Length: 112
Length: 109
Image 1 (cartoon, each protein chain N blue to C red):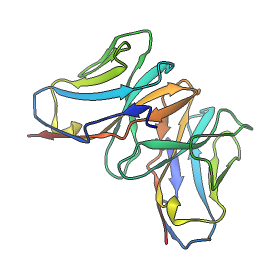
Image 2: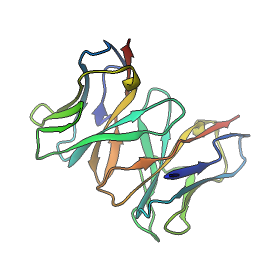
Image 3: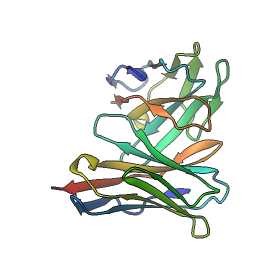
Image 4: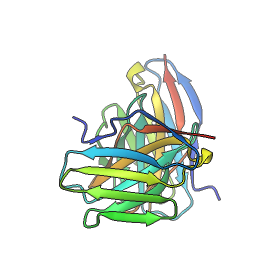
C-alpha cells in the first residue's frame, strides 16, 4: 500500500551542490506534480507532468528541472542549490489533472 | 498575490463540538475546491471536494459549503474528535491547484 514514495526523506546540501529528488507512484496515475512548502505558506507548484512524456512549469519553477522518466517516476533536480531552496518538497500524483492528488510524505531539504 | 487565503492560522475546539474552518478566494474562474488534512511529517491527504456548480457537499462528519457570491468556502466537522487535530489546507483548481496557507486545528479532549 505504498502510494507515492519520495526519497530521500531528509537531505542537507551546501550552496552550489546539485541533487535529484526521486518520486515514484504505484497507482497507475497519469499526472504527477512537485510542490514546495515553506513556513506559513501553502504548497506551491514547481512543475507538473500531465501525462507521460510531458512536463510544464508551475508557479515557482526557477532553479529546478524535472524528468518524467516513465509513468511511475517523476524526479526533481536542483542543479546549483541555493539557501532560498531550503524547504519541504512534496511529490503528488492523480489519475487526471482534475482529480484529487495523492501526496508523498515529503523530502526535507536544507541548504547551507 | 494570494488567490486563496486562510486567515485563521489556528483554531481550538472542544471534543464533540463543531469545527468550522474558513477559506476565501479571489479568482472567480476556479472550477472546484478541495480540503486537505495534514499531520506532522506526513503529506497532505485529500478530505473532501466541491464543484463550483454546487453549494454543499457532505461526507460523513465533514461538510463543505461554497458561497460563490462571497468567494468563500468553509469546512464543517461535526462532531470534532481529537484525531481531527491537524493542519487543514483549502485548495482551488483552475489548470492547477492553488493552496491556502493552512489552519492548525486542535481538538481538546
